[in-house]
Amino acid sequence: MAINQGIDCGKTNIRRITLKSGIGGSAGVSKGKPARKILILPSNFVSYRQFSFPFTDKKRIRDILPGELIETMVLPPDKLVWDISFIHKENAGALVAIKDQLDTFIKSSGNGVQIVDAEPCALSRAAAQNKVKDALIIDFGATKTTFCGITDGRINLLRVRLIGGEAVTKSIEDERKISPEEAETLKCTEGLHIKSIKRFVDNIINSAALEDPIGYEKVIITGGGAQMPGLAEYLSEKLKTEVGYFKLPEGLSPFTDVIAFGAALYDAPGQEKVNFKKDEQTNGTKSLVWLGISLLIPLILFSISVKMQEAQLEKENRQLVTSMTKAIKKEFPNIGRIDAPVRQVKALIKKESGGEGGSARKVIPMLSEISTARQGLDITLYEIDITDKDIKLKGESDSFQTVDQFRTLLAGKFASAEMQESKTKPNKRVDFGIKISFDKTGDSGSSGKEAKKSGETSGSTSE
Image (cartoon, rainbow, N blue to C red; front, side):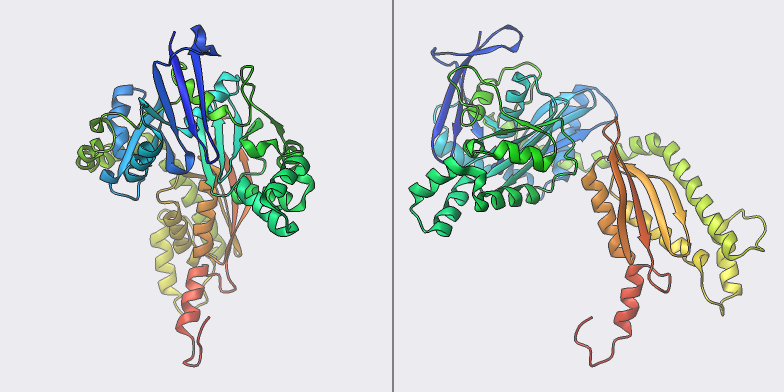
């Protein structure tokens, strides 16, 4: 049975928890000498990525994932350290840290440790130990607040706000003109009965941009700030879901010991974990080798993607042609049979070049704008309804964030783009409906702005 010590270097103190792992993933507090020490890198030092592949071969995923990871990073590969946190069927996760920050953290906190794991992994293992597979974990720390989402036992969300309990104490101190010690006492005894604390909770939750509803079965709160009276009840009301705490072995605190406890569970079977303190050949500098290989990977994945998506693209193409045909027949009722909508419309527009344009004359550039906005996003459109005043789109995506990004791009191209509906399907995909409106001339928003700019007089200073 392995004995591991988890180490959480918080702002206010260092927590060390030693556990002996048993059969079936059980764990108990131990006074024995740990075989390994696992240091936890805080969430504000890491970035989480999750990928899906069109195959389940673990070796192929391990070979391809580094190139995919590089494509999502802003900094050059030699500035980063990464590790794979899990591979399950066609899915894989990875965490990335900035090398300089990691080195500094290890020098200040990691003497004698064998493993440097990441905070989100420790939280996910603590959740698994509590038999929790679907939850939003909120860690109210001294200088940061971490939101870690778990779905099907895997991390699927990581957001960090660099504000925590110390800021709350300072606001009470300034508001009531009292000492820091008195402010801390008030925070711990009155909690959410103090208006400034309630404002802090509202601001921190709103800044996390969570979905409504949040999409998790429950919320688990931890960290020193989670002890504030009334916090669980207020969050339950605000987020409209059950709010609870971790259950830890006797003698451990569900507020201050969770991270170190999750760290010590490093060997729990099937759970997410990383080690940023491997030989450099297995993490940061290995990315340099993959930099050249990754140039070929997009081409390989593109070929795979084309075959997989061919049927879907053909379906969407038929839907686009159907929508175009309806709009064309409305504008040109005598057109007869439509075999080649684009060519036929161009010919009719050329023939009637002196007339006013209508919906059919606009449909081609509009669909082009929609197609441009979809590029690079996991967006599938299965219904397009075009009228004289608007376009209604229905489709599905991988997440609410992607849908909102698509809507924002459309809003920049048309007069407006409004979300009409969005909901999560059983397969975790998101169904959505977006209504696009035109301006008075029937043009897209971008065209209207360009026309306005070109028509400005010399006396104009701004739009």
